Length: 382
Image (cartoon, rainbow, N blue to C red; front, side):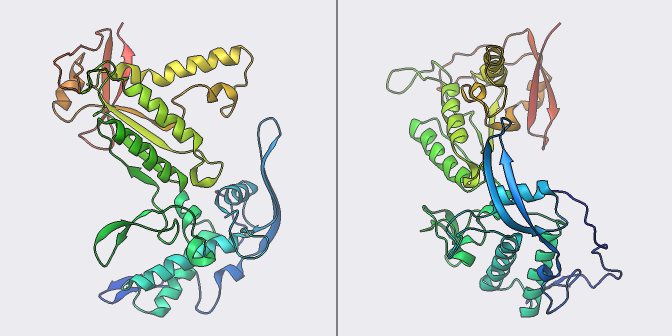
């Protein structure tokens, strides 16, 4: 959504006093706006058509006569209109958002009012007004942007009276407890990422499927460490054997692929992490490699190589996005383990069965976001 504005620099020639917190709330200094002047009224607006097409030319999405700032690129227009405009449920005709004005006001005004209702955020009404005006200016001039769930969900209930189906988990500020809301948007989901746990239990796995669907529905992503799950052929309490971690990862991957994040064409974001000592670590590391080989075979047989085509739809592991399938050294003996030339897997069911990872592979670990977490890459020894 980056673009070059053709107007003069929005930064003021003199630096105003900074916003200052007090015991009675924050004093918000105006940097780009003036009291009594709507920043959206100062913008030059255009009417445009936006179209999103497949590689074969078929139209995925189109909307005519949308209002956007004149300085915005067509790419910025296409992204905001196709992904972030509310497409249904607005009172009146046409029943959907048609202007960036509506989207910016929906966000800025809702956040301002929430700050006033919760109390203590703003020192006075003029500070709340300044906050909304400054935030509107930053958004409409692309000087800042929220994550996708904010654009998807914030303000739908407060501005348009849209409730949606199903509830969210929310904090009751008065009782200091978490509860389930009766609707989707009175307490909207506006966080981008969630970390969820899963236990070595069938019901826990499918509870995660449900919770992931809830997160994906409102446009957020989720990540889970699956190291608790027992490996393939480990004993079950009922006397049988487990179908294994990878079979359940395929179920979760299909669920993510079937859910349109935020109710749009945006794909769900999912992170999968597994400890290096898990019995199925080698299968996990090579999961996407094997699936890509299947895709290559299908493409060579005449199927389309497009990522949204039938070849990719027939394989698994495609919803672990942004290199988000990672292997992790357990915290215990983590430093020694990553320095060793080989490691040993550990069963999850308590049985003594262990096996070393093939000595023809070595682990080269590099630091990730913390000293206790290591991501590992695998290479063949020569």
